[in-house]
Amino acid sequence: MRRPFLRGIPHEDTGSDPELGEEKVPDCARLDGIPQKIEMPWRSSSRSLARDGQSGMTEDIVIALRERVGISDAVKILVPLPDQRPMDAPPGWFCLYECFLTEFGIRFPVLPLLLEYAYERGVALSQLTHGVVRHMVFSAALAKAAGMKLDRELFERITDLRAGVKEGGFKRFHTSMKHDIVFGDHRTKIHHWTRYYFFVKVDRASVGDFDPSHVLTKWVQEPGRIVPRKVNTTLKEKFRTLRDLSRETWADAFAETERKKKEKKGKAIAIAIPLPDKLPGVARKTGLRKRAPALVDDDILISDPLSKRMRSDSCELGDLPQSLGSLGGVTSGDFSSRTVALLLVRAGI
Image (cartoon, rainbow, N blue to C red; front, side, top):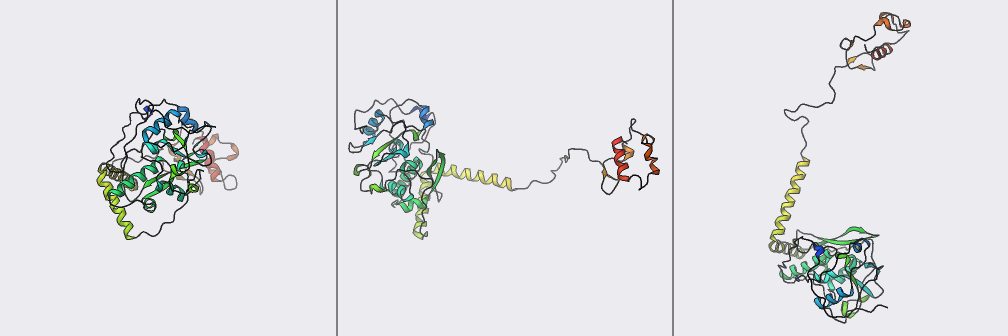
């Protein structure tokens, strides 16, 4: 049986994860309550982990994580087996991602608001993307700066929980901000974050006073629906306050959002304007040269008059079968004008 890893000597720091590439993500907190990012030791790239979903956590990473984040020895951590996935936490354990701690400051005991939100929605913490944690941490900091407290109802009101890309037989759930609240691109992209997950023992050290039976681990197809109470004046005022403060704090992000809105609106207007049937100075294309039709019978139209289609190799009336007689001798009892016309066309006359 595997033993939980305890705190040990920190691993030598050789830099940040090179898989983040050259993408530059702003790392300015801007508000009190948004934690600084904790850099972890360099780790070798393993593309196979991204393909099969196997955890990339190792004993060395757990030791470094304990030291740098400050995880108590009382918190039991278990590295998943090669065949275990985030939804396969053993009974009495739950799954967390490394970036929840290093990027967004989640500590033990886990933030009660996050645990409550997951439980009320009927989803496991491991089925929520890091974007949900980001929005919760940033919203809490924004609310604090505005002199208010972020509770679950307010967070539900200013976010929208949606299903993301399907992963196996399930989907992860992410949130989007509502009421024009912006946070910019601060820590929005964390490459390969789903590869580094581990299991944590459900006890007082990890979840505090939160009901252990409410810590969900099984993945679901859809989150539970929340029926909110009617929006009152107090809530509307909170929405406006958070919106205005976010625009002031992340003015660059707000300007970029407005630019994209105008660009999108301009494209929509361009699509909605109907094009004229005939543009000035542009000849109408018909494909084939237009020819004047000539009525031969009630049902047949010949494109060219016979006089314009005479050719040197065309047959004369005398070349027609004798049974037809002369053109003038054809009567309604012998051949109809329709038949004669067809014969003339086939003969090239």
